[in-house]
Length: 232
Image (cartoon, rainbow, N blue to C red; front, top):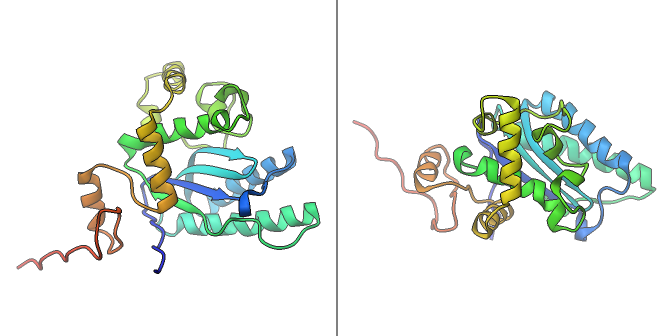
């Protein structure tokens, strides 16, 4: 069965996961994490992709990004993937693949899933046992959003700006969301959609999005969507 083409829509947030081959580490030293952040900054600008959030873990990474064009996400991920593998292989004296196949991604309905996705990403190191709290982990965007540091890689999404009228109010509101955590259904929905390539949103969002692509957007759809009747 042919695998589905990845979804890529301009102006909408995408959650991306890229894992190491067979669960192997892709970051071993501080320099490796920093190299990935440098590449993200370089190619986000070149490919016109806004980076809203990230979490770099030893064997995989997460991104929350919005492309200006439909080709922005694949172009950025392919360029970063090639450059980082070359860097990592040279540094470790190794050859061969580093990634566990192609990256996984989903398109998110912003008002429902941008903030939950950010919370899930920030808490990923805690769930993995890499940190006691999100604020303890250095290689995520969490510190920027709670006012601990300024990260020039990041472009806050409109959903974050809507948390308050001042930087302090936004930071406090976001920290409160982190404290509250994420419910199991939301966590599972984000993971399933990203790993399986389905768009994530309510029925109206999916219906509107389906008008722009022949590719099915959710598991419940069978085959190609019906054609829209020709207008008189």
